[in-house]
Image 1: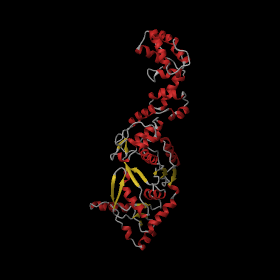
Image 2 (image 1 turned 30 degrees about the vertical axis):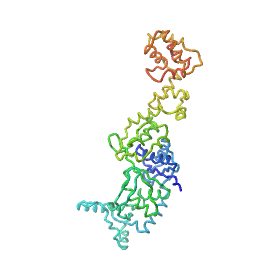
Image 3 (image 1 turned 90 degrees about the horizontal axis):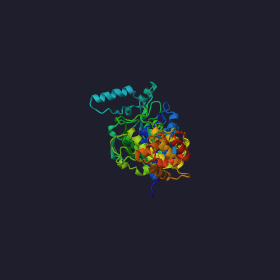
Length: 450
């Protein structure tokens, strides 16, 4: 019997803009699903109603679309409270979720006391010793319980697709709070319940969740489910080594998009940085998905360098086929079709630079003509071949101009470029000249705007 298609999820909180570190996690999930013929779920962790906004949720969806990884399904945790309630009642019924009444100040006092005795600052489970009468008295005083999950206190072991065999001893952890005093849920129970009920088979996330995994596996098993496969990837940092922050807006996808960085370049660098794979341009996301291998992800933090991203954006553009940019060029009012794109792509740092070369082709353009070159350029204008022109018109023209003018090298080519394009350098004139056309070329060579 064949294995079912894998199900993966990306679960951001809509409390800020996504940065490249978030993109790394989203891409790892989406590309693995693509590689394996699976399903990619976008699940908004929006139970924090005070901080979650529709605007940030929309921005997340926009960013994923820009990256080329729109989800197969969208879920909102804020709409699933009844499912979390039912799961917590089940844990209460089997004695794994218990009420605790200590205030934060009381808990801090306990932690300080244990530290003074050189003991780890773990919760002492005093709440488990309370009688019904004592609990009723505390509630009569106005206290409301938070609810803790009772850990087994055992070694939880799993095979991680990035880190290999992992072992978390839950005896070294405090029983985690799953439900706050006001009845709201923390991250862990909602994530676990959703993963179970949505059939998530692989949880791919940052290594900062490794310790959480031991707790989550215990909760999953207590709810009668089988844990998914885990992969904890290394985290991206700024070049300084500082961690990325959604709150501080570090390297947000929106900012990178507005700066003209290519989505495919962002994806390549976000996925391949911090792996043993070479960071290089890829043709499309399918090619990037084919390269994805969690066994090649490093354990050390990976530095994301915006300078490297800019170079990768340029290199990506230099290899993109016309079909990949046709709609974006048309939306910017840039014509010329594939011949224009093939002529200029090698000279672009960002796609926006194509507009400059379209102006060179379309005009009007003020030619640059040095007085000492005026006669030469007039001669060259008179030798322009008759139309129609093909891709070989430039070498035929140069073959006629060179002996007639007695020029060669820079003295021949540089004045022609300045007159025809107004620029010191740029795309090959062989490719540009047929796009400029005979009429505009002749006018520019004679020193007039066209």
